[in-house]
Amino acid sequence: QRTHSGERRYICAECGKAFSNSSNLTKHRRTHTGEKPYVCTKCGKAFSHSSNLTLHYRTHLVDRPYDCKCGKAFGQSSDLLKHQRMHTEEAPYQCKDCGKAFSGKGSLIRHYRIHTGEKPYQCNECGKSFSQHAGLSSHQRLHTGEKPYKCTECGKAFNHSSNFNKHHRIHTGEKPYWCSNCGKTFCSKSNLSKHQRVHTAERDLNVIAVSKKKSSLKVDADLNIRQDT
Image (cartoon, rainbow, N blue to C red; front, top):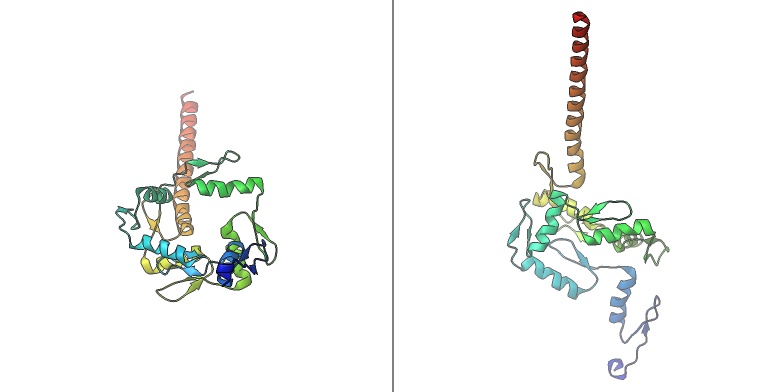
């Protein structure tokens, strides 16, 4: 009857917006809390509304003709291009303040808040502010204890999607991080960084060896000059 009468007695305490039923108020409140209770069982991505999860799930069902050499596939060539920048380390979006470059425009926008100090996302529990919505969502799980990212293979749950993705690669064997020096692949960026130090150390040793050789040649040349004189 409230729908017909237009009565809206369910009011949001955060912004004052009114709703005709409690379910709509509950859905609306997620825009303030960042809660995302609907989790994709395929990839762990979470959504605030079931309809958004339904739309997202279709991406797992559609044809993915664009393949990356790491094994990941995409439905659109533009998505493959964005993904490949992770391997090639191509970063066409550059910060005008510090020169740091990024593979995506969204990453540049989020980075730029470091310079501006902008923190538009605030926790309604403790008042702490964040420059990124993802940071707020992660922080709020400290209050709720929520672990929405559950592995369908072993049942282990995580409070961050990044931790879930790292864990899930144990089961899939996916290694998306590729060394441009030797072609070796890794399941995490941290492992790639550790590996790349091997190449850095090799280059340093080569520089030292070349430097010593030049010094030795110079000493021999000086001795020969003295002997000739």
